[in-house]
Length: 418
Image (cartoon, rainbow, N blue to C red; front, side):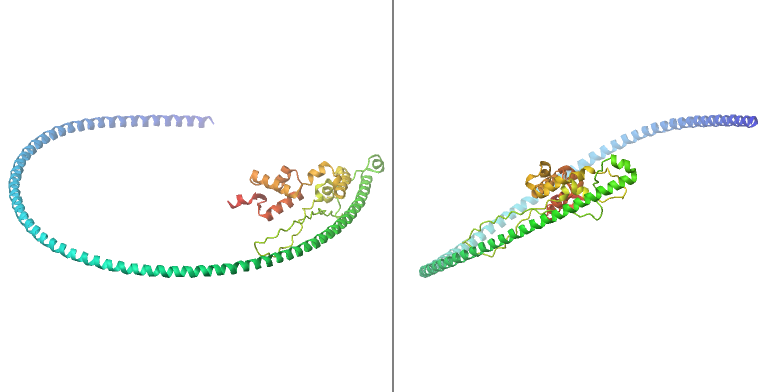
């Protein structure tokens, strides 16, 4: 180990010595390069100074010779320009003399031609004026004849229009009488049909109420039986799990779960309000058969709005479930019976849950518009409604074309189209 360390130290010192030698060699090379560069630079400065001196002398000699040559060329050009000006002056005077003679000759010819054209034009204008006067006389005669024919045609048309007006007034009176009798007969028929329809609706609504009452009685009978069976099941289960002593000391709590064989509650139908609107006769047009208006049935209030519906619809997960789960929901069953059977004596909490369908749709539409899209759970939480009310209102809004669903998010139809 010591030998290796000593060998490593020797190699290290050898490497350091080699590095120092290389550095010295590089410094020497750089110094020599620096001296050579200085020598070359001084030589270049001397050459440039000599070249500059020679170039200045050549430039001065060239400028002097160029000035002498330019002066000689200027004198020669001035002499040529004087000769050209004299020649041009002579040619211009000769051209002007010839142009003056030609212009005087052309003026005499043009004067003769203009006089001949003036006389010809005067003759043509006189002939045209005479022809125009003759044409105007013919046109005046034609206009007088057309005026006479027009007056005769207007008189005949006036007499024909008066005759047709009398006939049209008579036809209109006859049509008005016939239309009035037809409208009176149709209104009588419509009143009888509406009366029959109202009686049928009353009978149908009464039968629906009776059927609903019988159905609800049967459902609550089944519910009471189911609650008894559920209490017995819970007591047996408690006895099996905790023993007889524990079941006697601990009161049995009804469970909120429902077995798969339990009866499913049916939603009760709201009583429709039948208000026949009076029909106003329109004498301005021929009456058309009007479709019989169907009574508007209000949206049924789902039974799931009450706590009992929620507790009954949930299936039992296992036969050994804890008996303490959701006991308060089953205990609230009598309140639901009062709400369904006697709506006039319902409590304030039940009335707040049974909102008007149109008002609920308006609230849901406003909420979706404000938040720019919402999920079903968000709508239920924001408006404090149950799942059935939210689903019914959303389905109605989708059918009306006000909202649409995309990726389980309900959006306003206008926002989707944009």
